[in-house]
Length: 299
Image (cartoon, rainbow, N blue to C red; front, top):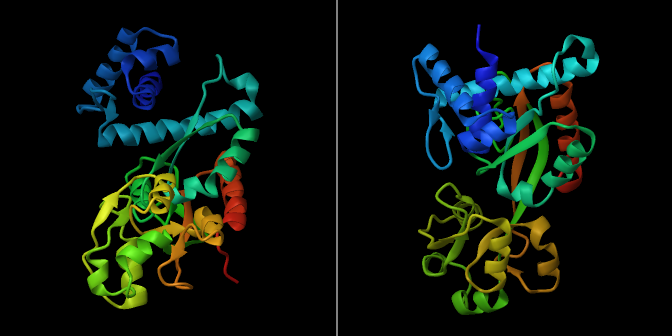
């Protein structure tokens, strides 16, 4: 039988990032938190927390944190249905999620706000590329994710949300400077682009899809959708921009498409743990509703 007070302490350390903050959140002393985790590690025979600034969970620690999140959701619902059975004050439960940055910057916050308006659990949202958020589910770090992966992770359900539409865009000045004779392989290898990081391959995919070439594209890295727009407006580079973020900039001609009408759609899916939780069902409902309004829908 697992020691659930120790698991709660572990989850608090990982969530808060330190033993001191976890102790304050749990209304106990830091030494009590440390002792609970030490005893749990001794019992399981492995490290659960990497001590640092911030503290981080090991792989086993992450799986235990996810387990206590699941238990917390079920106990939250049980307390609502049978309050006489649950002793002591209620604990605040969390729902860990993984979302791609462009969704978070456009349509997803409508879902998060709608859920938070009617429910008390805290949303713990991690950000990663849409091609990699499914890994968070498979590794047991989150209970749900917005992902570009169509195949459902083990133990999860998958729902098609729609597609995020991207356009290759830059400022008119940048276009005149770097592509005076049009878009070709030579100009693409010289003109700087904007990228979220090494996982971001949208630029290369767009070039391959619409130009049929594979070019080595120089890039600035900016891990923020808002920074992407500001950098493109300032002439720093060209980028694949979510149409929802730059529609007004395109209308004003502050940004222009490199190849007008050549957009790229990335289908997105909502994958969530297959568990009997009304909270997960309610969260799924508001996510699907927000996606219906914020993403491209197909018949």
